[in-house]
Length: 243
Image (cartoon, rainbow, N blue to C red; front, side):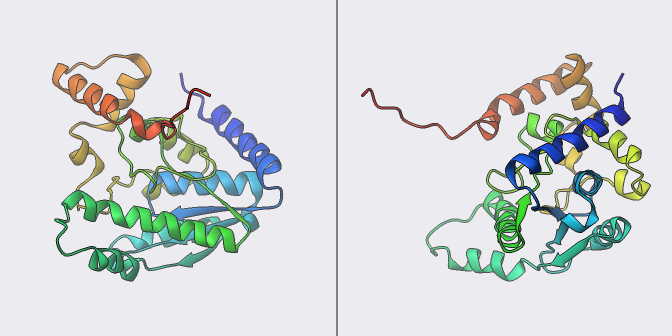
């Protein structure tokens, strides 16, 4: 039932309208990982604004084994891009933490995406840009993002589209198959997204769109993750005094 061509065209128009209202003449700045999400967002921005107004930022942490996929994308789209290695910045934060703090594995995993977002905003503010958020509905639904890392940005083309729908739009945009079908990995702990989540995106997307999940254990896990991570999708709670 999903009309990828129609939704793609609507999203392209939405991006144009966003820039008309929130940065006429500005550039779209996209963090390029080489996965489907950043690939589709970058391609949508190129179609909306033209390749001269899209800037890709590749941000390996030391050596990135699949950086050739990111290079494939920027070359395919013909966009200007920068490579900023974030290893020294990440190591600097970790090495500067007080020695009496027990640094958890989750802390170590979440510093890189937060450093990368800082990098994107540094490039954006230096290049008259607006930062693109590259999250999708499936990941947001179960909190599979880093708060103040990859979960933020100035505009979000895909936050209401599931992984299945994003891939269909990727095909509609004519992106190389190896980018659209690339097995998603977080690049942080060495596991695939689905290994980390405990279920497949196909199961998750079906549940999101239809409310149907054939496995009760998977349904319970999805519901638990969704409830526990709703705070990531909400504005920061603010105290309101009775004045």
